[in-house]
Amino acid sequence: MSVFTLCVKDSFSAAHRLPGYHGKCEELHGHNFQVEIFVKGQQPEDGGMVIDFAVLKRRLREVLDALDHKFINEIPFFRERASSSEYVAVYVFRELKKLMTETTVFLVEVRIWESDTAWVAYGE
Image (cartoon, rainbow, N blue to C red; front, side):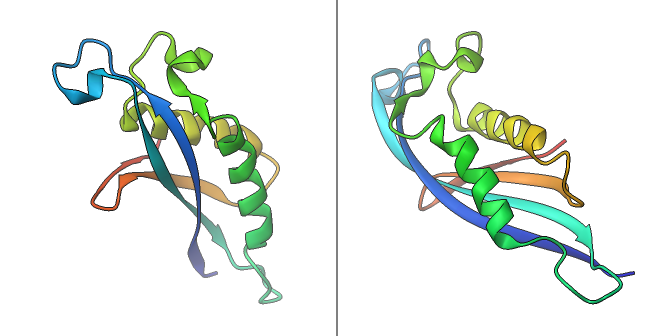
């Protein structure tokens, strides 16, 4: 049976600061984050879809709504860890994984674009 990788993309805007970082990012600032998620799954024997893209988009939007137009440092997950792009990727991955348990796909990677030229990827 064939295995496919599917990806959907969405975005959110949020503010954060990196206490203890010695540079501009220590101050309050914001990003227009782009988020890509990658899932793997087997094509059904009937040749249909691995999963409907609309399902992936809805689940991703659920997670991103908790971050959109927020001060990331105030979200409970980030109270004990940095609000860096690395940990934003961890947060999105773990929250999304909880929402994907009843699907037939496996969450492989979350990619967070902090800018047009810089991204971080996380997977478990």
